[in-house]
Image 1: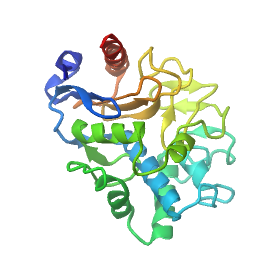
Image 2 (image 1 turned 60 degrees about the horizontal axis):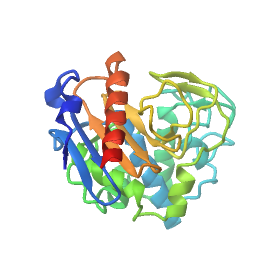
Image 3 (image 1 turned 135 degrees about the horizontal axis):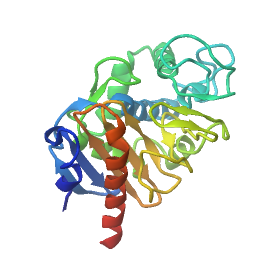
Length: 273
């Protein structure tokens, strides 16, 4: 087991920072208090994506069924392509025309799943994802788009699931982690505008974006999310690694440098094993 404490030692408020890394079969590194529970902000959307995939395989939903505004589908909502504003009900683009990162779109999807399943979103998500993965410190306390609480120990379980899925088929995961509505450009809040901004189903895809919050040596196939609470979660299917971190400091200029360094160090460390 690698001691990764040094990777978070220089972060703001390192006593509240934690990091973990896993292969498909086992955790291979930890640093900081990995049991500390914190709001994971937009990393919540990875949970939304996996919840949606389980619902699709169960037949509760279809990716291309209408959902939300006229002309939009479940696929549009999960891929930030339905034209909703960031955090209001305002429509600011035609369906499928731009990649507009939208908490509203994710919340509209969650409401749609509630209508189709007859369960609250929190209950469905717990039964579909949290309980089967034996996550003991993860729960939804508000908006599905940004109000999940979790810890690195539980996120390690999620990382392994998204490397070798047990709740869904490999084909379904492959669909979720390929670019949806390819070629759409748009802004990633906190990073900037990208001519090509690939996104999967609830999960951002690295592609060739520069600058980016993952490492410089992560593969273009890397997917995941970062959160405004100072959290990140990535899965690199080429390296067969998942890495995640939680911080007690809101996302800001400090984050990109230390996250890139941590990610590149993890990838190099494993490459030397």
